[in-house]
Image (cartoon, rainbow, N blue to C red; front, top):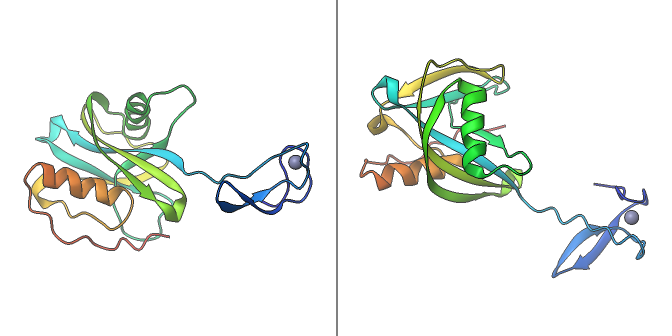
Length: 173
Ligand SMILES: [Zn+2]
């Protein structure tokens, strides 16, 4: 961020609350780019119509072969539970029956905080335009990946007493 979104002046670096942050030089404006992480919800989808297999999906924008959890941003005034159920419906067409919190994970590379849920869902899988493919994996065959949502999958597997193989590097963009 180079210019103040409130008054248009070039931002500079100032110490604010213990860190150097991009700040507006105009004291009357007082804008500070805090650069706080954005919350993201993620779903470990247990597809109840597929013997409880876990749905992993491939994002159309990914240039590498990798399947991951369904994720999305929250809308204003939306609870994380409602947000993850909405994302599951939008991206896969599945109806959420229950959501259980798995854990909350820092993801500094994208300046996000990821809230991972175990989502039990039903219905016919219909991917939206963001996704190009999916696979249904028996829980005992899952392999977590390093960083981000992969840590949630690892913890979910551990909590179920599953053997957790070493995480793979998804080589994300
Ligand atoms: Zn300003």
